[in-house]
Length: 520
Image 1 (spheres, rainbow, N blue to C red):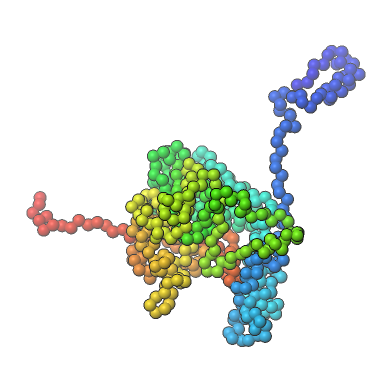
Image 2 (cartoon, rainbow, N blue to C red):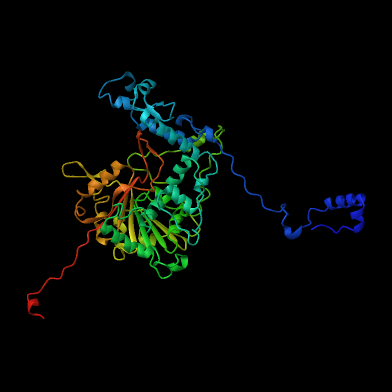
C-alpha cells in the first residue's frame, strides 16, 4: 500500500520521477500492508556450528587423533590387546617379545587402530583384511561424534500426529513414519540406531504392531497370552482414540531395567521416544544395578561439566588436559558411566528405597527412577505389587552365560553368572515367580546362544519357565560396531538379538472327593 498519486503526477513524467524518489525515501520504520513484506524484524536463525573436522577429514590414527579421549583409548588398547601373530605362534620366541610380550604397538595405516606388535607381523597377518574395514568405519565414527558438526540424526521428533500410524517393520520405516530427519548416510544410521536402540527395542517388543508375531514363529502361544495382557494396558480398546486423555484411570506401566549401565545415562528426552509410541500410557522406568549412573551432587552441575573439545590445534594447556583425561577400558565388565546431569525436578529417593537412588518426574507420561544396587536388595519392595498386566523386566546383555569373577563351585571352577549367588542366581527365580515377562538381549549370535544355554543349568530356573519370544535377531539393534579394548578383532553390535521368557504357568485342577459320586 503506497502513497496516493495525484492526477498531475500521472500526466507529468517529471512529477512521477519526483514522486518515485519520495516513495523510495520512505523511512524504514513504516509498515506495508499487514506487515507481510517487513522482513527486517524477523529473528535470525542460529547458524550451524563450524565443525572441527570436515567429512573428508575424519580418519586419524588413534595415537594422532586431535581428541585426547581417543588418544587415551589407543594407549589403553596398546597395554591390553595381544598381537594376533604372536598369540598364534604357540611359544615361538621372538626377539621383540622379550621387552613387550605380545603387546600391540603398531597402528595399521588403513584402519588407524593398534593391531600388531610390529609392522612385520602386520604384513604377515592375512586375517587382518577381514576386519580392517570395520575398524576404519569405527575409527571414523568416533571422530565424527566429536567433530563438532550439527548432529541432525540426534534431533528427536515430537508427539505423533493424530491418526498417524507408526510402523515397526525396521529402522528405515520407523524413522520415516515417526518424522525423524532423513538418514542420508550409513554413518547417520549407525549413530541414530546406537542412540535409540534401548527405548525402541522395548517399544518394538511390547507394541501391538510389533514385527514379532505368531505367524513368523517369534512369539509362542504362551507368549501371545502374556503380551496380550500387557498390551491391554499399553493400548486403548479398539476404536477408541489413543490420546493422553485416555491414560486417565489406567494403571501405571513399570519397566524394570536390571543390570543397567549405559542405558541409565541416556538423556530423558531419548527415553521419551518410548512414550511417543504409547500416547495413552504412563511409564515408570526403573534402572536397577550396581553400575547405574546417579545425578551429580546439587550445585555442581556447571562445575563438573567437561569442557568441549573445540579445536584440534595444540594449546598451552594441552599437556595439562591430557593428564586429566582418563579412559577406563571395557574389559569383560564395562565401567560405570559418568554421573548424569541433575534436572530441575530431580530428587533423592534414598529414604524411600534404602539404597542410593533418585527419581525424576520428567513428563506427565514418564517418570524415571535409578537405583545403584543389586535387584535382590530391593525386590522385597516390589514383590507384592508385581502384576503381569502392567510390569515387565528387561535385561540388556546381562551375560548370564559368562563365568562369574567372584563365585566358584566346590571343584574350584567359576560358576556361571546366572547361578552366582552374588549376581543373577537369586534374581531370576524371584522374577519367574511373578509371572511377568522377562526380555533379554544379546550383543551377538554367540552371546544369545550362550545365555540361552545357561538357562538349562541354572538351579530354580531350568524347567521353571516358558518361552514368550524365541531367540533371534532384534530389528532395532544397533548398527554400529563396538570394538573391544582387550582385542580389536572382537566387534559386536548392541542389542543384536532378543528373546523372552516368563514363569511357568500351572493349571489348577480340582481334586475330586470320595463323596462326589453320591452327589447328583
